Length: 352
Image 1 (cartoon, helix red, strand yellow):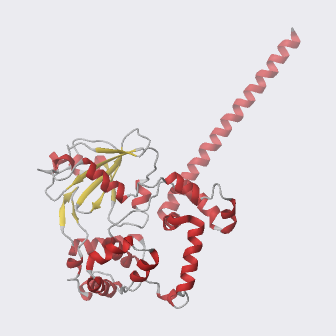
Image 2 (cartoon, one colour; image 1 turned 45 degrees about the horizontal axis):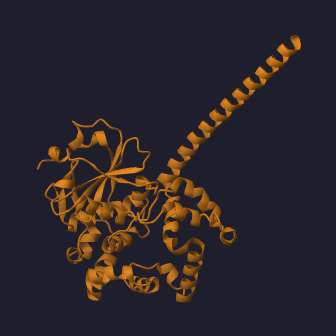
Image 3 (spheres, rainbow, N blue to C red; image 1 turned 180 degrees about the vertical axis):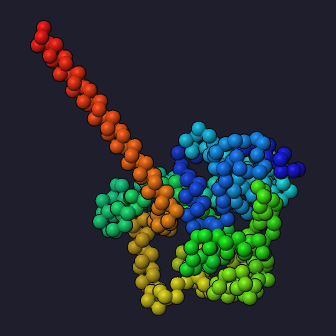
């Protein structure tokens, strides 16, 4: 099937039912580095079919190119999606996968089993006064929560997450994205082309094992080159992807201990000052404040420091302030009119 025909396949839908998902802030919050946003009218495959200014988010989940957008006039409550495989088959054309299968992949990826409204209520300490006094971040979180309520914690493949994290050390999002893209395009399996770009699966452990430190250095990974090569060897020695995936179901203390044994997975400058006992104490403290999803709450605070979002929020607040001023002015004018009308009516009564 050619690309033009594949663009004609209908979008499939998922209704959020007020369980909020902000695609932009979730996909560009420093969790994943393989997504891009394009106006629908600028997508090559849609050129002759759409003039929409709607944004489409394009990335990869597992072995599929995935397109996401909000359904028009749905108040961002309905997500539309397309999955494209290596044979250029889209959605219903993929015979070994049902629409429900695709829905489950998205629900798992975006952690949609969690009611984000309940989580934010807990994190803002809406009903627990004692928590408000426990930490100074509460006011900061309450402020950030207004702009980041739809930011969800992505549930990535552990291997993708591990090596993306190694790339992220002492780095900015733009540069991390370039590194992850280099890793994927050099060692991963190509899925297909879309909108003039080639898309790849994240490399398997076996594919990563052929990476040489010198080659990674030449691609600009710097000191992370050694971390990638050595961590790959360590994961293989520990039992490969089966071992890594198994850490997900282990207690946090166990999985954390295993992970920091990998090269490039701890903070050297803190290693000597944070004893295991102190680390445990801090972890319990944050869980007491934010509950079992404390890591998700931290992601909100982290995203609030991303410059692109800061600038966006400033512009949004400016517009909001301007709109509020206009509304106040209109209200004041209405009040003046009402007062004038009262005065006129009073004079008319006196005259009579």
